[in-house]
Length: 137
Image (cartoon, rainbow, N blue to C red; front, side, top):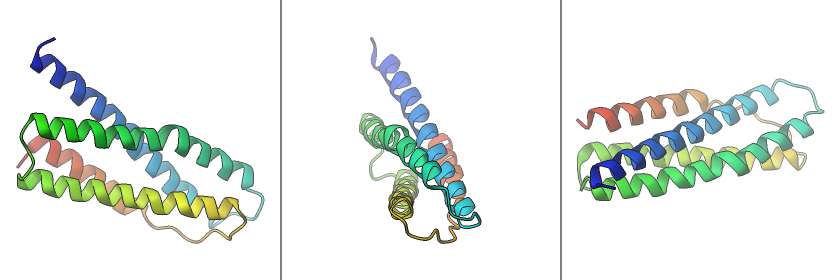
């Protein structure tokens, strides 16, 4: 397999993992927003969302980081402004995911759901990441 072929496959896997990761963070954002408006009795639903997070969203996040790092090394992109900004948005989404996971864990343990307003930020960051990755301005 040539370098160009390997790059295309790495990029495809990175994009697929990014889609799974961002969709998981969006789903968790929507769940948290919904839970704040629902009466008690949502423990099984929260447990299901947490299970999805552990088995899909977290592995996708790890894949995004590993594959993205490999792509950046192969493209010699570290130090370029667009990648630095993109990494800032990736760190932001990863941090939001951590905060959301902690909130879900506390809700499952019996804490009252609090209003969550992270969805616009997640969507903005995801669009910015896609723009920067494609345009590389």
